[in-house]
Length: 202
Image 1 (cartoon, rainbow, N blue to C red):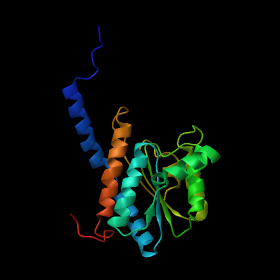
Image 2: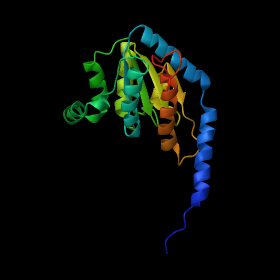
Image 3: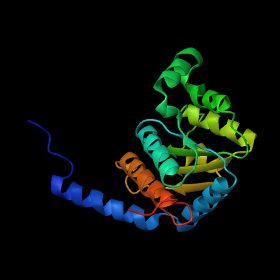
């Protein structure tokens, strides 16, 4: 006989959506505003914004690059948008250095900023998103601004970031979907913020 589901479908839907509301009200407004401030400064000095992420967060990076460029007029890029280079570097140099090599090839400077979208923020000891950790160390050495929208305990990103929006953990079963969902909520807030947007809201 098939096993009964641990949670009834209707109950799961209710709990999931209640969790979304709970995350929303626990987001740190000061951390979001600090991120806005640093992006305003980046825009004023005509620095570039580089977005890094893996998995679903990588897809979010690609979408966010469009928004920062089109809506805010910030020069933005992500290695995810160049599959040929990404896979060539992975094949020839290794996945753990793919982002740092790309940042080096982009001539990252202290005028620029690196923004990480990640569920856990990276942990070198556990070999989790080592490519993000190494890229952030490179960015730190370059004097670049470091930003993050992440979950769990924030990992390496939270440790080194100048501003970091932490997506709170409501339930261990929904860490990833909430993290990736609220990356989108927060970056859309950022790009349409009156201090950052260049176009009329729509």
